[in-house]
Length: 321
Image (cartoon, rainbow, N blue to C red):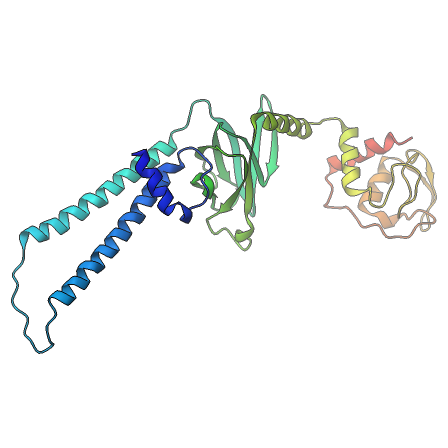
């Protein structure tokens, strides 16, 4: 049976995406068989029709002879297609249940569909990390995706793995696969979900188990940092370092070294001591107090930084002495 599947794959495999997971042959064998059956049926039917047209051709003026029904022919063309179609149906049902069988040792990863991205959740003990748009998995390791949606229907489709499953708000769906090849494989949303539906893509990145474990350890550590100074430094690097240095150098705005509890002079306000209230105001309403000698060019970060991020920034600035 596997030999026949391999032959059919050689004939029609070029019409399908790359095979990159276990059990993809369950889908491909059925597809390839239906493709072969369709081609044989088409050319067989056309051949018989052509033969009849030539063999039994008469001029338009001849009256056709009366031909009674043929019970044997009618039975054959009813029973044989019925057997074929039922066979395809049972084959497809068997393949479905085989692909749906979840191994006991499968790695569980959470998947959330939202307009318009995929978010993946990894757990390690009591810790977890969320990653967007890139699903990392180790090669030759069974994986089960526990999926849901936060807004509308989405559908998670990886052509190279032959898996597709809807994500439904308020409902959990599952799908399993075991990647057999390293590399990047495309993920598509195949349920129309709004104006940016066509851009809702992601990547399954299949790597070695060793590389995956290193990556997961790093992501879990990064996602669970609790030191406010470290978090403040990261917020500073992402949002502030373009215009402010952590030293005394001037970029666009003043350097922040030694800022904490230092008296500040302004172009448009009375001097104050740089405390937490002043730093928070400078982030949310930067032009309320413009430091002497510097232009009023800073934009407000209101709505761009959370209160927690602002608190972390203040803790970091306290350390710049």
